[in-house]
Image 1 (cartoon, rainbow, N blue to C red):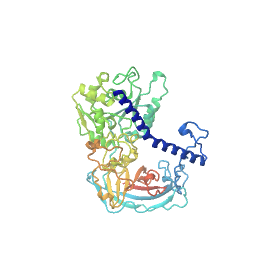
Image 2: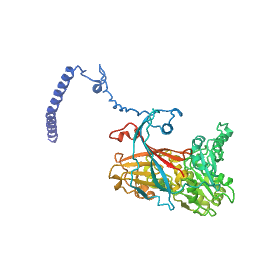
Image 3: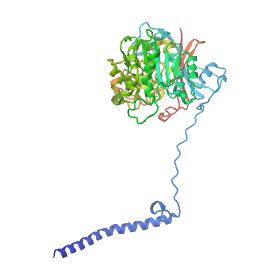
Image 4: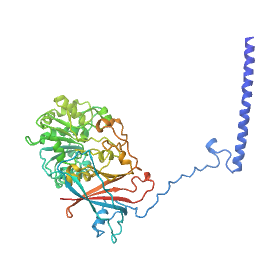
Length: 538
């Protein structure tokens, strides 16, 4: 009885399920019929390969839509002129390859007269000038040397301090561990601050192994530095095999991080008792705008005691990952007595360190063999920022050191710094506001804002222009302000600065490149705009 009821229920259920599917099956058959008729009418195969496998005819992919052709504007080409092709000095100056300008430009200039101030105002302050900075704009054809009509160089007076004095700094020693190629590429950068200064430079060339028959010419590289006025010594690695194997397996050559730490011993051995006050360990892209500014900062500390000076990363995320230590890109400074203590335990410190970082090895050695702690020196910048660094340079800062300026971000640091040594010392990156819309960060940029925008900005705060300006930077820079969009701020960046000894002027060339942010411009002009500041020298 239970079995018969169960079988009857199952048959009823099956019939009910089938009856429910009849409308669906009917609809599918009708749809397939209409679709087949449509394809036959259009001459398409009934069974396309995209659904049922390969058919008789392959369907062509849809054509790729080409991007619209970039509009061409007269004079927007960037030509490579050879020096001496134009007999007009002003045009010849603007045609230099360092600037790389379009053949047509929009040009303006001002002649700056320096009024020496007896007291230096706060570097973070903004000086207000009622008159505009950019007054007359002229279209100039750099390809035509016959008809040149440059705008007049209207004078403007700015109060600035005197240039930094020229002194000798034989009490300072600097060490760098890097590759032959990078040391060679850094020649001009070291020349800016180390040439004719008396400082001693020591380079451990990490990839130079004479016993392996290498072709690296350390003597020739040393002579290149010497010919530029620097006291430089190039040496091969003092350790061959990896000593610290933390996070590394097996044998192998010692990495640059271990050579970086061993600089302490090599510098100490070459130091002069009674003369050497500070021993510095740097990265190959550590840059000092002025040794005078650095020496002033170091003079505030007692070099006769165990002293360890440096800076933290400006990114708290890096500190969370790597810990509290002197980050080498900003520059790490040791007193001779502390360097002597560490030198005696150098290889032991390498073996016992629990980090692969050269800066971390130095930290572990200091804490293990001395009672010194890290002293933070203002003005040293590790600069763990990527992308657009304009927010930093336009903030009224006066940096003692800079780092990552040719890798994580790009800035012509030597050109920026020349105004300090040649014209007005602490006026480097000093800010002036002209009229209602223009802000000059001396040596870095001229920013022109839309009407009303500049009035609303809190210029005491750093603009978060770089990639991911999170709250991790607040501890170092204070609370950041939001980045200004390109349609509210037009920036002329410094491209070069030149001392003209014959004319007794110092020339800064600021350029708004036509194609740099063209995708963000409502109406791209196609030609570069140039503002030149001509500083009259005393």
